Length: 177
Image 1: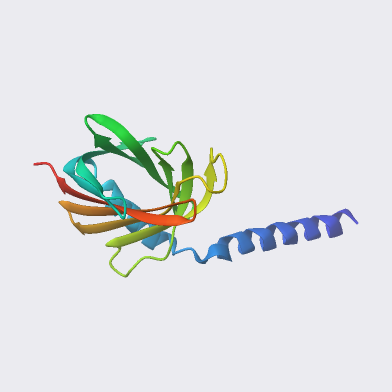
Image 2: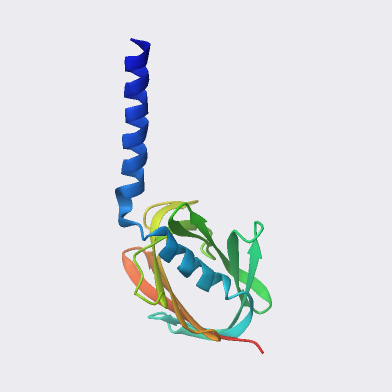
């Protein structure tokens, strides 16, 4: 009887692990690692501008990328007037590339990468869940897109939703020399 129960338990663990691995349409680990390595290559100081499309706001914005967690996470500080206005932390979770965005709106959307294009130059994230959301209509980032044009150019697009409205914040950055 003990052997029978042990066999059932092992089978359940195997089936559960296999299902978790297959769910969510995750990219293969090697492709995810390649994409994460491109994000790691952003380490350094950047300068540029932001524009809220649909809100008619724009201005200068800088960014700083650095590694933390012994190289297992990339921190992106978006800087306005010398202050970190927003921070995003990119990291791997098994075969999944994740991002947690510490938003100026005061909440923290947690996002997961969606399948990327063949050369990993456009990386799209979609919100999985969010913390510190006061109500369902509160403004928050739903989608994040990184366009890695070259080693010295990046475009960041945040799709922001709230009160039934959607807007896009576009950030254009060039690596400081």
